[in-house]
Image (cartoon, rainbow, N blue to C red):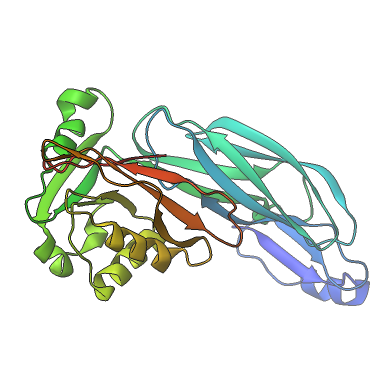
Length: 293
């Protein structure tokens, strides 16, 4: 426990305050108010930026700092520690009454729940707001939901995610459902949802998937032999109307001996995104996934 004495430190009132009995000896901290503004820095917020966290892969953590004083603070040092080991450090300049963000990058060396702390190394009048705690969860396994359209195959995905292929890397727990079962499935129980060869998505399903992605879920598209680009384009427009203007074909399908050899599509971006990225889809009767870049 700490005894805080908050006041303007006038002698006449301070004597009365000091005369109050204290049950047991406590460390005391005087916080003056009124007159000049004391210099005080604080960590306002800490958030984990990375959505996918895996052992041996870089993770980004962002801290927001604030300067509540009237003088600029230059070269403020802030550190990140995980499991009582300092793993990153940064410095930043804070204008009077302003805020700034710093980003740390660290690589977790093991799986599990890793306790961490972000600290300001510059002492000021209030030390308690110079520290923020966090917990980094590096999962033992990830739950994957594969939604398969009519006649769509998911065995190639299940093989790619199997322990035999990934060996000592992150394990996946795979659940497979049909396209018709998607509306009745709770998506928040899964880390990743894969849409494999779906024929169509209702507006309610698109909204549910958009909410799932906004809350941190991962989403994979695998158009099948019957297309599915209309559904994919609807999802892009639903989640990023300022970035995706639609889909357009820049090549035609070529069929040899009754097999599909490929379609080439272009995603049209608008406003704040100037890229115009081609997406090459190769999906034959087996429903193999598209490759995109």
